[in-house]
Image (cartoon, rainbow over all chains, first blue to last red):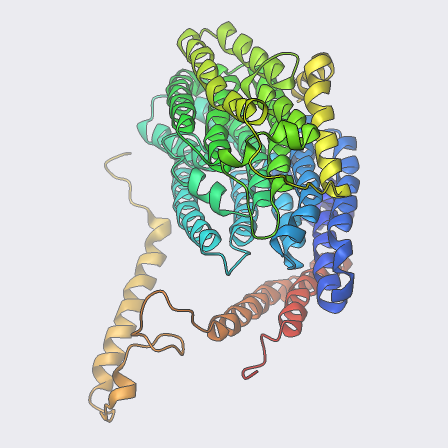
Length: 481
Length: 124
């Protein structure tokens, strides 16, 4: 029987930002349907709404709600900030992007907001069912976003592939959850850890299988090899602004649940998942970086680089320490900035009817557009991991954390494969600075795209030069947990 | 314990399953003695939500049927959800009333959206 004393308005405390975002999303749909002439406002309203949610999220301090189903702690709010930043930057980028691609659908922005709600729920999920719900809300919205340019065969193909693969991943996740639930009798993540000890489940193969299935599904969401096969096709086919969004938001949310489930739910199994993830990380870094070498399309190259970076980020998680997890969190934030920046250049260069995604299009960019070329140079340096950019700091902390936990082989892998990655990132720089321009591209620095580039540059250099603040933030977020 | 474990709690589900299968099989079988059999071409083709089922796989097809169906499902689920709410309403009080209004509002928003997008117009 329901105890009515438990049901009160205060129960909504932990999900106020999510509820607020749902209202914004509905409002945007309404605006689009009832007043189509004001569509120009949509990206800006999205940005304002997400900024407000960002403020709310940043102010959250360890509230547990709905009987432990929602945990709005500082760990969650760090990831939520990354996701919301992703939405804000993607919305600003889309403001420019829709002019070149002729995307006018109003659903675009509300879908983006709904997927952000899913990510926020994932980040603060204290229960496997909430986690699944958030994951589906995020994924379903993104399937639609990928396929939104419906007359573009490439997008349709990408959406179809993503939907099918995502469906499989969801099924695998549910199967894993059902095994865990069957053995422990609970879907509460913290209770699972307690029950594995009291219920003598530490040696249970079925529980391990359940954990393995869940890890496989999470690996799919964050594009860890061998579950990465969808990534290049989907990233290439999706509208560029959405690709940028997909490579930041869902990835951060995916790592948030990775950390929550492994660290809170299965800490006793670190011996098993540590080994498993370290081999997956090695494989991912190898596949991502080596395949990226032979790409001639920058968008596809960035897709493989997204795979490689998921591998790097995994290093912090697999180390199983708070230090490692805070390194992963920092890395995801820096990756968000530098990847958004690189995609923003891609969006900036595109003009109606010409996507300019191939390496050839970047020939001599430094002569025709020194500003854009210089920004791209910084983002490429950061993605490679060259100081004083954020990418270097991020990799350094990951390396330190994994070394501290004794994963020497994986660390060697990180170093080797990042030096391989220098080849394809710096090749872009070489094309821009050491070749002659083929055409004179007139770039249009609209307010939206300029804002994205500014924020990304600030983030990349800010974290690169003053790393202490972000690391400190991530560390306190964890210790406060 | 391992050898003697009988999941009694699931017995009801097993019985329901058996009855469910029997219901289908028996009614179909018994119905054969009473119903008329007048097959013609349109009746015999596979049912495919208002679409001709045999065409090239890569064609574009109308999704009107699916939209109507999904709208129906949404409100169908809503009405199922209303039952337990109505039964326990006395105990839940104002809080539940507001909750239900929020729930219905969210569904209505979707309905209005579909309406405005001319989903309900069968012929355009």
